[in-house]
Length: 132
Image (cartoon, rainbow, N blue to C red):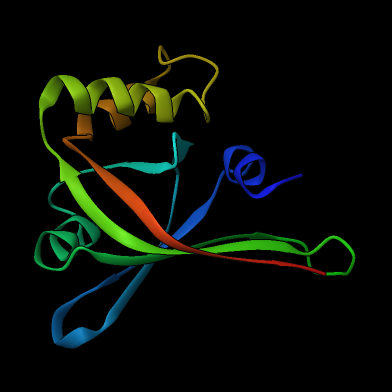
Protein backbone atom coordinates (compact mmCIF):
# COMPACT_ATOMS: atom_id res chain seq x y z
CA UNK A 1 0.00 0.00 0.00
CA UNK A 2 1.36 3.43 -0.85
CA UNK A 3 1.21 6.53 1.33
CA UNK A 4 -1.94 8.06 -0.19
CA UNK A 5 -3.84 4.75 -0.09
CA UNK A 6 -2.85 4.36 3.56
CA UNK A 7 -4.03 7.89 4.41
CA UNK A 8 -7.37 7.26 2.67
CA UNK A 9 -7.85 3.90 4.44
CA UNK A 10 -7.21 4.88 8.06
CA UNK A 11 -9.76 6.37 10.46
CA UNK A 12 -7.89 8.21 13.25
CA UNK A 13 -5.46 11.08 12.86
CA UNK A 14 -3.65 12.69 15.78
CA UNK A 15 -3.57 16.44 15.20
CA UNK A 16 -1.04 18.72 16.93
CA UNK A 17 -1.64 22.45 17.08
CA UNK A 18 0.28 25.15 18.91
CA UNK A 19 -1.56 26.72 21.82
CA UNK A 20 -0.97 29.23 24.57
CA UNK A 21 2.63 29.68 25.66
CA UNK A 22 3.68 27.54 22.66
CA UNK A 23 2.24 24.46 24.40
CA UNK A 24 1.33 21.65 21.99
CA UNK A 25 -2.29 20.49 21.91
CA UNK A 26 -2.68 16.96 20.50
CA UNK A 27 -6.07 15.33 19.83
CA UNK A 28 -7.32 12.28 17.93
CA UNK A 29 -9.78 13.27 15.21
CA UNK A 30 -11.85 11.82 12.40
CA UNK A 31 -10.72 13.03 9.00
CA UNK A 32 -10.88 12.66 5.23
CA UNK A 33 -7.87 12.67 2.92
CA UNK A 34 -8.64 13.74 -0.63
CA UNK A 35 -6.77 15.58 -3.37
CA UNK A 36 -3.66 15.94 -1.20
CA UNK A 37 -5.62 17.78 1.49
CA UNK A 38 -6.82 16.68 4.91
CA UNK A 39 -10.24 17.80 6.12
CA UNK A 40 -11.38 17.64 9.74
CA UNK A 41 -14.82 18.71 10.89
CA UNK A 42 -15.02 20.62 14.16
CA UNK A 43 -16.55 23.59 15.91
CA UNK A 44 -14.98 27.04 16.16
CA UNK A 45 -15.22 26.78 19.98
CA UNK A 46 -12.71 23.88 20.13
CA UNK A 47 -9.14 24.44 21.27
CA UNK A 48 -7.75 23.06 17.98
CA UNK A 49 -9.79 25.54 15.91
CA UNK A 50 -8.88 28.46 18.18
CA UNK A 51 -5.19 27.47 18.02
CA UNK A 52 -5.24 27.30 14.20
CA UNK A 53 -6.85 30.73 14.03
CA UNK A 54 -3.75 32.09 15.83
CA UNK A 55 -1.08 29.80 14.32
CA UNK A 56 -1.62 27.89 11.06
CA UNK A 57 1.36 25.53 11.56
CA UNK A 58 0.25 21.96 12.38
CA UNK A 59 1.59 18.43 12.51
CA UNK A 60 -0.34 15.20 12.43
CA UNK A 61 0.37 11.50 12.63
CA UNK A 62 -1.45 8.40 11.40
CA UNK A 63 0.05 5.02 12.23
CA UNK A 64 -0.74 1.35 12.69
CA UNK A 65 0.90 -1.75 14.10
CA UNK A 66 2.96 -2.67 17.13
CA UNK A 67 4.97 -5.57 15.70
CA UNK A 68 7.14 -5.76 12.60
CA UNK A 69 6.48 -6.24 9.71
CA UNK A 70 3.08 -4.58 10.20
CA UNK A 71 4.24 -1.16 11.44
CA UNK A 72 3.47 1.73 9.12
CA UNK A 73 3.01 5.41 9.74
CA UNK A 74 2.91 8.85 8.21
CA UNK A 75 3.75 12.14 9.88
CA UNK A 76 2.63 15.30 8.12
CA UNK A 77 3.69 18.89 8.66
CA UNK A 78 1.91 21.77 7.02
CA UNK A 79 -0.42 24.71 7.24
CA UNK A 80 -4.06 24.66 8.22
CA UNK A 81 -6.87 27.07 7.63
CA UNK A 82 -10.47 27.17 8.79
CA UNK A 83 -13.20 26.87 6.20
CA UNK A 84 -16.21 28.78 7.56
CA UNK A 85 -18.56 29.10 4.57
CA UNK A 86 -21.66 27.17 5.71
CA UNK A 87 -22.51 25.33 2.47
CA UNK A 88 -18.93 24.15 2.00
CA UNK A 89 -18.63 23.20 5.69
CA UNK A 90 -21.77 21.05 5.58
CA UNK A 91 -20.79 19.41 2.26
CA UNK A 92 -17.33 18.45 3.54
CA UNK A 93 -18.64 17.46 6.99
CA UNK A 94 -21.08 15.01 5.39
CA UNK A 95 -18.25 13.42 3.38
CA UNK A 96 -16.15 13.05 6.53
CA UNK A 97 -19.00 11.60 8.61
CA UNK A 98 -19.92 9.07 5.91
CA UNK A 99 -16.50 7.48 6.46
CA UNK A 100 -17.64 6.60 10.00
CA UNK A 101 -21.41 6.15 9.73
CA UNK A 102 -23.41 4.08 7.23
CA UNK A 103 -26.00 6.83 7.11
CA UNK A 104 -26.34 10.39 8.31
CA UNK A 105 -29.85 9.59 9.57
CA UNK A 106 -28.79 8.29 12.98
CA UNK A 107 -28.82 10.49 16.10
CA UNK A 108 -25.04 10.71 16.61
CA UNK A 109 -24.33 11.62 12.99
CA UNK A 110 -27.02 14.32 13.04
CA UNK A 111 -25.67 15.79 16.29
CA UNK A 112 -22.11 15.89 14.97
CA UNK A 113 -23.22 17.45 11.68
CA UNK A 114 -25.28 20.08 13.51
CA UNK A 115 -22.33 20.94 15.78
CA UNK A 116 -19.83 21.26 12.91
CA UNK A 117 -19.48 24.93 11.98
CA UNK A 118 -16.01 24.81 10.45
CA UNK A 119 -13.65 22.50 8.62
CA UNK A 120 -9.93 22.41 9.30
CA UNK A 121 -8.18 22.08 5.95
CA UNK A 122 -4.55 20.98 6.14
CA UNK A 123 -2.24 21.53 3.20
CA UNK A 124 0.72 19.19 3.73
CA UNK A 125 4.22 20.54 3.12
CA UNK A 126 6.26 17.57 4.32
CA UNK A 127 5.50 13.86 4.66
CA UNK A 128 7.62 11.43 6.68
CA UNK A 129 6.79 7.75 6.17
CA UNK A 130 8.05 4.75 8.17
CA UNK A 131 7.56 1.04 7.71
CA UNK A 132 8.99 -1.89 9.73
